[in-house]
Structures are given as C-alpha cells and as structure tokens.
Image (cartoon, rainbow, N blue to C red; front, side):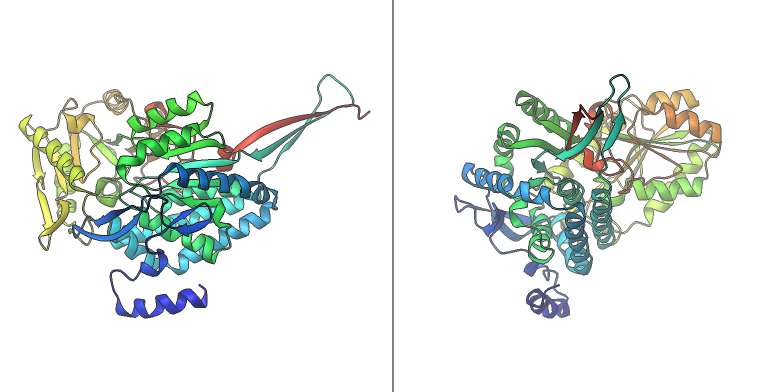
Length: 503
C-alpha cells in the first residue's frame, strides 16, 4: 500500500470502525472514462446495509449517455496499447492487483459485510477467491499459445493460428459476490488484453469501486481500462441496451437472472455481439443410502447456507433416498440449529428478497410441507432482512420450493426411491448450472454424475468453484465459461493465417 493510503487507513483500523473502508471508496465519485468523478447529471443514489437497514453511502448515477460514451471511448483508446504489452507485463499488473486486495483484506471484508450483509467468514472467503482468480489469470496470460499446423495437401505452406483480444468488453456483475464476480470477469478480460466497462449491481457498488481504486491507484492499471459505472436499478435496462448496441463493445458479460440474461442475449444478437452469460441455477443435491451422512450434512450446510443461500450454485432441491430420509433429516436439523444469525448467517439482500423467501415457505406449508426448523422471519438487535435457517420436510417436487430457485436459507427435502427417480428429479428443470451427489458406490457416482444435466457436478463435494476449473452451465443456465484453462479464450478472437510460397 502506498504511504498516502497507509496514512489514511492505519488510524481507522485502530478505531475498529465498521466504516474503516471509506478511504478505499472515493467519496461521491465513480471511475468514468479514466477519471474519478461524479456522473454527468450530478445525481446520486443511496446504498443500504441489509443487516442494519440504514444508508451507508451515496454513489453517482453514472448511467447517462455521456458517461457511457466517455467510458467506452476511453476504453477503446487505451486498449490497443494494453494489448500490445507483453503477456508478462499484463500478468504483473494483475498480480499486483491481487497483492493489494490481499493487503486490504480486513477493510474489504468490512465493506462487503456492510453493503452485502454476508458474515465476515463469507466475506473473507470471497476476497480469497478473488485473489486466487487474479493470480490464475496472470498465469493464463502467459500461456495464451497459438499453433502451427502442418499443411496436409499443399506443399510450401505453413498454417498458423493466433489468439487476439476482442477489444472493449462490457460487464454487468451481481450483488451476491460483489468482489469475486468482478475479478472473475474483469480479471480474465484484462489478462486477455481487453479493456473493461463494468456496471456493478446497484445494491453493492462500493466493493467494485474499492477494487478498481486499488487496481488503478495502487497496482498500476491504466484507469481507462476499467470504468466502474454505478447506476440505480431504474437505469439498468438503459445501460444494458447501450452495452448491447454500442459499436465499440465487442462482448457483453452478465451474471444474474435467466430472464434478464435472455433479454441481453437477444439484444446483443441484433448487433452480432458475443455474450458470456452465467445465469440462474436450481441445483439438485442427491444423497443416496450408501453416502457418508456426516460428510453429506456438512457439505450441504456449506453449499446451502453459504451467503444465506444467495448463490447461483447453492443446493436448492435436496433429494434424499427414502431408506435414510428420517435419519438424514434429524442430522440436518440438528446442524442447522447450530447456525447463529449474525455469526454464521447474514441477512437477505433486501426486503424484496426476504418477502419472496417468506412467501415461498408460506406456500409450501399451505401445500402440506412442514418446517422442521426455522420457517420465519428474524432479526438481529431488532433490525435486518433476516430469515431463520429453515429445513422443510414433506416436500413434493411440484411445490414451488421444490421446483423453483429459492435464493435464501431454506432447504426443502424431497424423498426418492430409486437412482433413476433421483436422476429424473434432478434433471426436471430448465436450469443446469450445478449439481451435487453423495454416494460411496463408485459405479453409482460415475453413472449419476454423467447423467446429471449440469455444467458442474460435485461428487461427494458441496463446494466446487475454483479458479483453475471452468465455471458455467448448460440449458438455461448460461453460455460460455469463466475460469479454468480456457478462460481467456472467451475474450479472444481466433485468427488463422495461411503462409504460402515457402518452398
């Protein structure tokens, strides 16, 4: 950290203030076209704490046509020089960015907790993931190899394949992982030699601003390469339309709901733009009678209740073989009873999300389900959009909680009889992001993992996301992949060159 930033941050750390993160977020400014400044219209919108139900900051409405054009044009101006750098030079900037995030982990954790609500352990886990992603992409930048292909039929020719950055890319990131979704997308694009124009979720814009501040002020990234366009919810459609239609933008990346993703896909197709979409999940979590139940329970807790159930890959439909159903429910209920609000579980992101979860549980109970534990709204010190960690039993697959993505701390348990029935239930959804299964029969593990219609499958594992593996779904859960060995290719054009007359 620079002496300038250290002088601001160190005294605040000593105060242990919950807002010690403020020096990382330039007050009243967004990163627009290479400059930290207010939006052209001069308007601001508030950011609230979902745990405290109080305003914690204001950020600019940086969503006018002037702000968007300035950012996109600045990105297009800076991108060729960035792409012309050696891959080693680009990698070193990403590595420096990762180091700055690591140095500022305590402040970033406080910030994520403040605007997102997730507990400290979840926030620190997200920061660690973001750091690992940037370091992975730095290594991948050094490995963007081309090919030389021997000519099969014509002598005197060499066939060469190279990969070149697409140019300027637009990103729209979600509120549930305000840091790691930013680094997962922007890190890969920057490593590939692209420039990024990014709109963070209106619920959690502060983390993106802080990360961009560290990247540009501390890690040496040209600020024109990473605009952060904070904007309120009512401007989201307009921003998306510009991203999908602007002639200088060559790719649009989005993480969020399937419905919004489809709209962006259609708009981008009109202008022949590439898309990278990570959309809704509705993950099945299958426990067979041969499973290690202690392992299955601990992994289900990690999968289902991380970030209070507000992740696209969390277990959503828990399918338990009938011979172990009662035993498993007892074990899970006991484990869920140990989850403490404010320590292990944060709030839902806002009242809309809280009302949705409460409505789904209420509908399930009216249809015959029973809350073995939880099933009600809650609070910490009388405040917050909390919902008690819940286990629902007697759930039928046709109930809304057994059919639709919940996005909250509710585990509906569905009974099944045979392996074939479990696979059919697991695949009975338009979504196909992640799936999980637990069994000690090797043959069953292979059969079920291969039969599950999902882009990612955890076999005796409830958390599978890691930078070195591809992250993406099938069916209505998205297009393209993030992370893994091919991550940078998503942001690159493949060019074939035929060299003739060499004999």
